[in-house]
Image 1 (cartoon, rainbow, N blue to C red):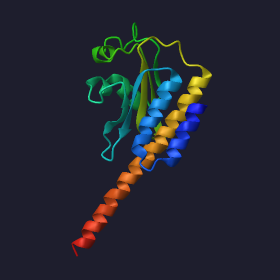
Image 2: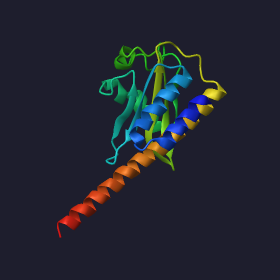
Image 3: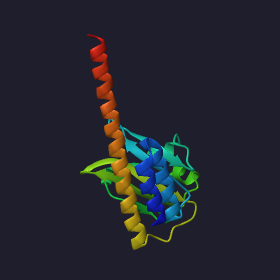
Image 4: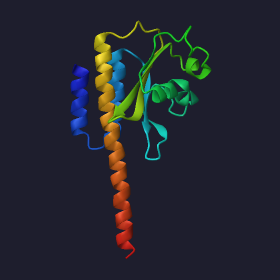
Length: 170
């Protein structure tokens, strides 16, 4: 619970929401006892880009491979307790990161997928307790609200810039 209190406090006091995504990711990784992760977010052009990462290079090709795509396409969480023996074992780039377990949650708001929250561990994970699943739901919902706010901020800035350009051209 302490993790969530700190996160909500950061959300309430941070003027720039982008660093708050990193705070959300760090808090969730620590809470779940994992080591690495990232948040992929929908852009204004409906592409997905890495907005926060911890322990992984956001330019690594594995970030866009089938785990992320499966989460975004199915719009449901993907849990891989042990990559060894799973369908993801053949994913060389995922194995090269050192992950042995990976969990991914879609960030959904008002029926639209805004991104995904992906965390992993260098050792097999025993599974998710009810408490873990509830926390994942809370973190992913907070992440969706933050991404929505960031997208809305970007849209408003574009509109403001266009308005200022139009006014200065008259």
